[in-house]
Amino acid sequence: MTPLIDVVFILLLFFMLTSTFADRRSMDLATPALSSAPDVADKVIVLDLGAEGLRFNGEPLTLESIDDTLHTRLATGHPVSLQVAAGIPLETSVSVMDALKASGARSIALRNAEGQP
Image (cartoon, rainbow, N blue to C red; front, side):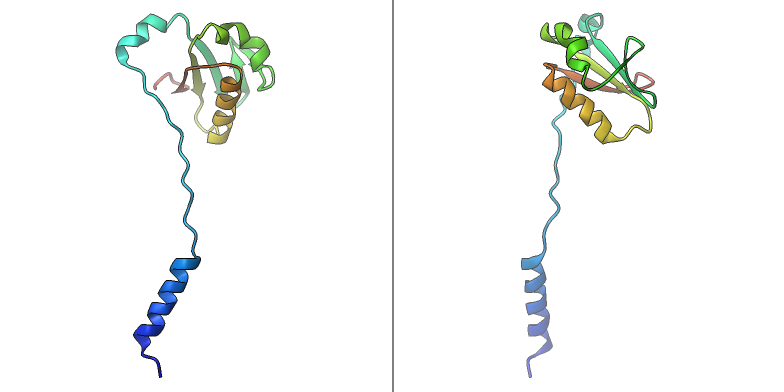
């Protein structure tokens, strides 16, 4: 008869070898210095993402039309401020950020709808 500690050890070894670990993915976010904020405040492209959808200057904007609408501004290197309302899923925000990056955005800042970083 095998001692119980050997059986426990074999079970522990089995579960350690057959288990998978969670793949944690992250996004690198750069936080701006406070001294640089006043210099670029007039050049910032402000997009609002709320329950009614994505808006630029009060006009509705779709993910497909980001490139057409903002191409000239993004080409000059203007930073983008994405103001996200409470309750918007993270994957929606990331989809908008991906579309902005694909359209040429170099710097994207996330803010909540009240304007807090």
